[in-house]
Image 1 (cartoon, helix red, strand yellow):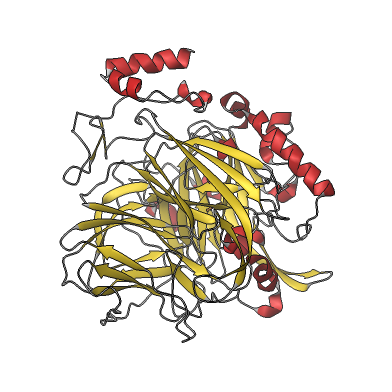
Image 2: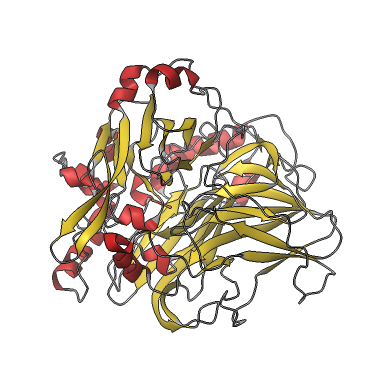
Length: 598
Ligand code: C2O
């Protein structure tokens, strides 16, 4: 195969032959990637990655290596089996039995772990009784692999019960992320887990403590809560019953059921903590009593080390932070604070917290210092500088770009024949509703470009062009806006209305914050931009589960004409046939007519 010999040649050139022989690319690695992977080393030899040398990675790559240009050769496949099951009468972490959906019988699901440049191969078994599923690898760029994005109705059909699907993708970036079901609100029933990719870091640390998932938690099923949330007469969406730290917390009802999560620090050491907000609805501020966070990555984008006392985390966002255990040996609260006006959701737990425990302190005592109360806002963090810069030429965008690429978000109250008045969110006047049985990738495979209006699809045909979108909302609620397949540049965020005369010249084109989820102010606007360098179909949506299920989404079909050559689109067909057969004869509750499917 030409790809293989090229790979070999380059390995030889860069003295990596031994490494390849010791770790040959596994035969079933995605063969379509081999010819395209870039293996040009990214810098001067820097030695081995270690506590005093975290900037370095495998000698020839480092924190300044641009992952769009150079990634380490893949020499490991990381295999995982995920079995998704119904758990009726699940004991739960806080003493309340409930119906859940779990992965390998645990919550959160198993952590998927890889190193920069590896392939991740995951067999997802849908062992649910009546529901489809699809697993989306949040924040993974899926460069050239849109067909592995796991978004039902967009890149695949849902996996029917009793069926299995293998996802296989290359991790071209490193850092912290998560995976979750994209089958309506299913992740709110427990179908989620952390996904971490090890690589260099912009500051040194001694110990990688792994993922730290914080997530809102409900005793009712997400499906039922969604039905409550959409009824206009119920007002704002349901409060969460609790907020869990790594899947644990005590029940705030005073019964003492459940237990606090306790994470151990080694005195004197620097710890890498990978913070993830994997909530359905709650966005919040995280702080650790007596300690600062040194932020080294926003989502999967490494940034220059930046010290913060607290961090606002919108749903879906991640921060890699370093915590130095330089305080007296003790237990400390890691607090989550919600904004007081409930614009970022509300929880029945007024003081959600986990415990950070110094080795040597009492293993059972609670922290005594509650900390200085944090005034939590609902506003996205700003002021981070990505290590690998992305710059757009000054004054690149014109008022005409704003006019054509504005994505207004809105809310309607509509009369539903059986439900009465319900909420319906929309982007550009369309509440998105995808076709589970006919995903966009299959349209492309068929050469069919007659897309129904309801799938809210925008075509982007220009190659490698910076493309701006102005997302705006005139309502007071902020929205965590997430884009698949790209990290976007946050050129500007503002409250109120975007005035091209006034605001266009103020946009920041010079290496602004880059990430895959940003909090859209409400009312306000977000000017985001990405380069059309990843042919595929990519969803952009509010990551509040209720909102996307009620229509708050849009999808970009990027460089459709190249997709058939780039990836095996026909891989979508067998599972789609199975799904369509299941829809026809299966014993399932049909999807509600107001459910976007996402
Ligand atoms: Cu966390 Cu559409 O994704």
